[in-house]
Amino acid sequence: MKLLRQPGIRALALLLSIVSLYATYGYFHFYRDPLSIFFSETHGFDQFYSATRQAEAGAFLDALEANPHTTSSGLGKAGPRPELCAVFLTIGRNMAGRQYVETAVGSFLANMSRAERAAIHLKLFFADVPTPETQHKSYARLAAADIADDIMTYPSSLSDRDRKIQMSLLEKWSKDRTDKAMIERKTVYDYAYALRQCVQTSDAPYIALFEDDILLADGWAARTLRDLHTVEEMMKDPRRQTPAAGRIAPGTPNSWLYLRMFNQERSSGWGGGYGFRSNNAHVISLAVSIPLFAFLLLARRYFVSRSLARQLDGWVLLIICGVAVPLFVWLFFASGKASLLGSSPGVYEEWFGCCSQALVFNREHAQALSDFLMKATTKPGRAGRGDMLPKDFAWEHGLARISAYPMLAQHLGRISATGTTSVEAGRIWSTAFEDLKAHKLAEDHVHNVELLFGKDAASEMERHH
Image 1 (cartoon, one colour):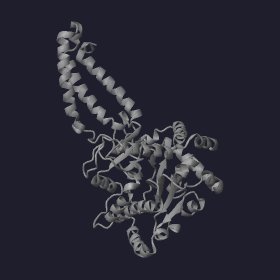
Image 2 (cartoon, one colour):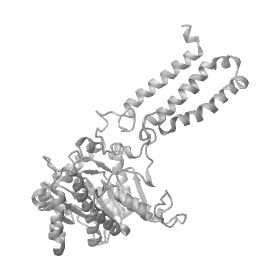
Image 3 (cartoon, one colour):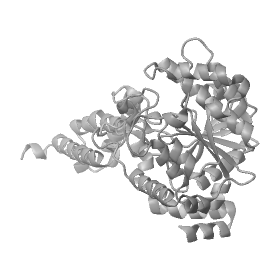
Image 4 (cartoon, one colour):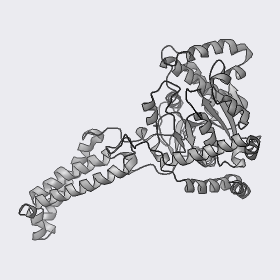
């Protein structure tokens, strides 16, 4: 008991109690942040909203199989002047049951209003060669369902003049699925070709490229169209400057390349890791501890009562400034940025971000980007990754890259079409997507449809859903 009368012992006990409570809280609340010390390999990728949305997508697909004409005619097709040309790029996978692309398309269309559907030209690009009709398990079902505006394949869309040469090249790249360099080259070419097809066959001002193993949230279309309108307003800001190659900082380019709909917390967290010297935690600790130590010394001498001053002895000051401050600074970073700060809703310029699961491109630069990607496939050595090359293009041309929060796409794929291991594929994951609430998304969906297309469109949607 005498020990507990010592101010330093009491301060240390209080510190240990606070840290224990925080660790308990972190264990139960931060386990899904992949950059947190509390991350759980067992439960970090548990599905919450994804499970709900997959059920909605599955219900749509079941209705489509049971009564294809009624389901597809209830949605309609693209109108004469769509705002968005959307392409799902898909490669056949060796998996049983419902294929990824079917669930992805189901989530694309589930709960969609007729007004939203009229604003989108939907292409399904089966990129297998030489015979996608037999190589892809979903081809026959999706083609027969008549829910897309266009079913694309290389054999059906390549010009007669180029078909033989291009098909031979594509088959060469696709032959060995374990040759990552060749698969990388084929993947980049697929992206370039999809962009080019939208430019050539649609006048839509925006082009969305979706990978086939994603899941889209309820109301994604109306929300994304509103976000795109926000981007256009951002670019009109008179404070923005003329683009300059290699000189990109938030707020400077007056044109943009793409809007990101998917990101993973691994790409937006603190960059330094868990070490105490990471993220300059040691420097921040000194910057806080030294002034705090000086303040406590002055307070002890001039501003507090004698009884309280006796409690602020040397051991207490050491524990506060030498142990507690560095520990709390380290815990702030080690707990994970996504856990403590998250991402505020809105549309922001961001030069970081991972992956090409769901990107919406500015048509103004789509043809040039397609040419850039095509050229990359002719270089010796590695062609480059499909998600990094657009960033390189944006950098070279002084174009902004935009992200919209909350992210409305999730990556579900575990069986990769590009040779990625199932473990690494599973880590391409948006924790924030799982925090979405179905009822809130449904409310926002109606509200956004009303803002974009009017009360009649929103009322019709509510009647049908």
